[in-house]
Image (cartoon, rainbow, N blue to C red; front, side, top):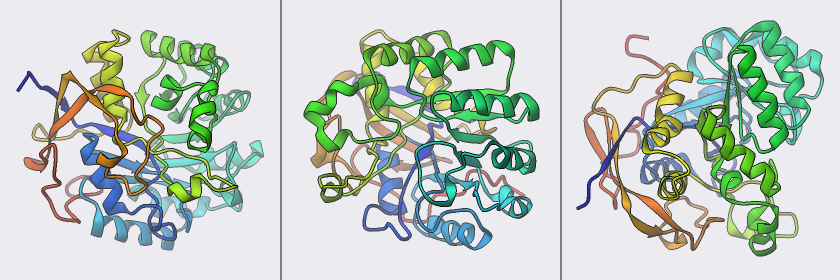
Length: 360
């Protein structure tokens, strides 16, 4: 076997694992298995699968289901509600990896477009755990005004345009406590790809122009981008091919191979890959995996993305047919081998809430 790259504690801080009322799309068991196949130690689940994770009962329901099913370590976000759930934060924040505020492109009580409501959530959320935001275009400036005022670390999810990258580059130069995530689909796909992807390319934020894609790569090159996150959002193929296709694409199993392709194309170094997929997320979320938590990856041999080999329950990928680099050979968590490149080696329930430290 060729030399294997060792990556310590890979984290995907932006996934939608479904389950609960959307278990027909995917389950915590199926998607944490997909996470192991993608090389991850830990994934962080977003709050917008019904019932939305905004209250203590919803938190307890999700936590119990994840504890029973997960095969990798996990965390979950609390959702900020336009109806006002700030009084819940002292009780539920200690269990969570952060607060998620949807400022654009979502539905129901999670969409917050009123700046005064956003400010109430910023004021109430405790220091120490990031606020993750969906903010597009000029909304990025509105969120930065709150960061400037409250100095609470804010992670900008799935940034997709040149304007957003340039705005956040300036904010970092100003010294604001922020971090930036981008997705592989915005790095490797553009709006013209919709012609052949059809509804499989239906996502939020939408695919953008080549100039925007190039700006994201420039942000990776100069350090503006901290994390490559999958925004893994599985839907059934039947749903995606319907007359009203939902937004979202799977990505847990393709993110590492696509970044391995970036190494092969000399867009990034191996060291930068490790930063983008592991070390920077560990720093932002204040996580320290033990030395026996790591992934071994073969970067030198090409591989093909094929839907028949995917573990995610949805069973499709917008990257199907692409030649990539980054075959996961082994995943170890806390000294236990959990994946051998072919099979999951632990039972459901092995995974832990990675945000709860020993003794807490």
